[in-house]
Image 1 (tube, rainbow, N blue to C red):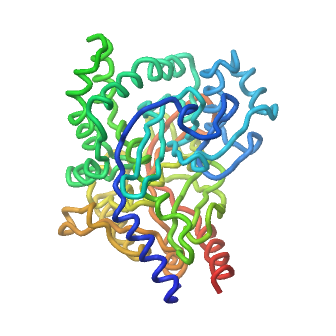
Image 2: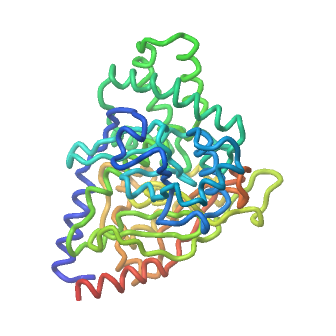
Length: 415
């Protein structure tokens, strides 16, 4: 991977990441802004997968989405519809979107519209429901669906009005500040959420809505420490899409999991997925649950690590070990190891305890294979059965075979 052509291509890809600037510009229903999406389209996290191969939490999320859309009146009807062939399933990534955990996006769900100001491309992500018993972890009870409808009918319109009042919000700047305040912007988003709220609060207050609804939305945002995660994910997706399709580049543009397969995409290899079985997370479980209850890892949230955040920036967030387990030394080790498999550093995202060194950025499949070090990923943990939800949080180790198969395909295309 040290040819002159690959070196120049990788430098271009890295510079595109560094120069990208993601901004939040709007919030709209998915069906209005995701080109080609219909009421019979269900998007999901990870590489492509069919209904019969989906894991329990993803089937649960699909079941809930079909009831939320009014396409089914009960879980039994929803599951029958999902397996009938009348529903079109597609990865979120194929629609320039990302979804955490099961990652299910349906036609009526409101999505953040994020634009890469430098290169013009857009990316999308739904609102974050919070932790525990939520759709993205496979829960579909009546209270889960009622909250989704409330988010569609109350939260999204208010946020849209506030954004019209505020104008674009610079996510790159908010993420950089959050890192300095103890977030790694994947499993810890306390600072990012508060920074976003403080930026938008005056405009939320100015939106023409009832005081009751404004208070509800205020409480929803500040009471959900993971609210900023979905914004950061969409911002990272907009960044990484700008580094796609660079001839000769061995830079990883996406890492995603669907609960069955872990998949990666590489800039110089286009939209092809390289997959292997998804691994079981290792971490801290909620009371009453153990590793035997866990589903193999799932979600598009590893787009944060792909862009140099999350576990790649864990040295900036030592207190995260209270949530996902491990030690403070683990957070430092995670970040330092990632410098060995990346093309450079992002000077926009600085880590105070490393003397303000930039986060390791730009995963190179060649370096992964040469060093034997796979990218670090922190994650939530879903119960393996549909309808239960989140049971913990921790780390996951991606399968090396994804990177090896991509490396072989790369050498074949660029001998």
